[in-house]
Length: 599
Image (cartoon, rainbow, N blue to C red; front, top):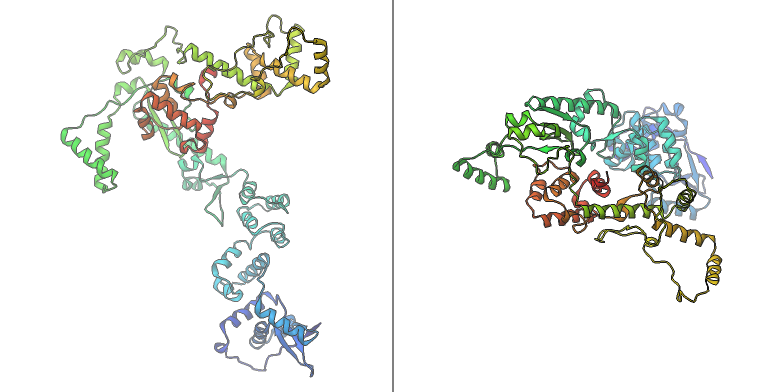
């Protein structure tokens, strides 16, 4: 079925290459560099001559090679004497010729990668490779981007064990050992390209990290930080998180020193992306002394405001607008700075957020005496802050927390039974874990909105149709026939409903083992919380949850709302699965937030 056909060069031949089609020239070059990937096919006639029926263009390219490179006869005999597949009969030869013309099968991506890479290694430019293989230059570039992958990755692609997209994901790695380790873990499995990149860059950070935005990619690279760019996307990976964090801390310190130069009593820079509510609750806030604009300045300010909203300000107009805005916003006086300080942090966008004019409890009395801080409506003798929660609200929140603890514990039969056995054996002395009595403790707030317990804690027990004349022995035997599993479930359900641990240490242990979460059963709403709190408390909560500065438009707009509107906005924030456009970190905070009454 095969024959070796010798292609000989004419002695002293000087072919007119200008008359040869350019595609044939490129193909002959490709064969010279890469070898013959697919042999021609032919049919032997009655006189013994072989005619090429499939691969005529390849055969012409071989002839051109023999004429232009006579030395190949000795150096590359497989090219000048190629194997030709011989058709057994004329019908088969015609079928081969028809198939050759009707359907030309493309190379497998793995074969393309190797062929293009081998040709590029000899110095062939992309346009030459594209012409030789009849592909676009963009296609060739995409394949060449994979040419430096370790051979096992391309082998896995050829074997169908990974996709071309998965192979592309491996280009982010410069660690061959890690590459091969990850390859073994995904062979034959459907694994996303994103997951592969994560496995190949386990410690790396992306440009979206707030520390990168704050320090700057250039600063990181100048400090010796290594980066890897994804050849198939815009992703950039930073390979040295420790260095980035050191640079971040150093830049924070510089920012703190710059703020300190403004003359504040104290300055603190924190590495967190926000200042927690618990911290802010212990601080009073001073605000800038507002500036006054003249009538002419005010008219000009209004004019520039309209132009800014219409995006019609030129460079000079923007500078003038900023000057008037700064004058109108006012400034902190030296007296205010002498009694207050600044907490600065970098938010999730990588922007420095200094919170100025903060008065500590230790400085409160002096600030009040100096007249820079109004006397708070509550300044207790022992300086202990009065809870912002009313007694009734505290009872409701405590009931919700108890419900959450029971809701978590109801699935832990062994925990419940162990506690009961311990208490009944006298192990707790006069204290107890269960209210073993007919009246169970309150485990649901009066305002039922936003609250839902496991139905096992709310449904009533089975009652006798005739409590006076029923055969208790018969009823008990029927109960026992239901088996131990039913008994344990009923015992757990009823004992859990009586659970009311008062000891803080024991309550913490139970919560840890049961996985107690108030937010599983309780979601804050306008009715059950927000309408029952003061307006300034709602303002602070809004700022905290969305990580805003007090001067941010979202914060100032919220502060201008009526209390009922604020309550509704906060309820919508907790109810909306998209968290009002909050970012991932903010959404996580909202999903986990509970009143600091439980802190």
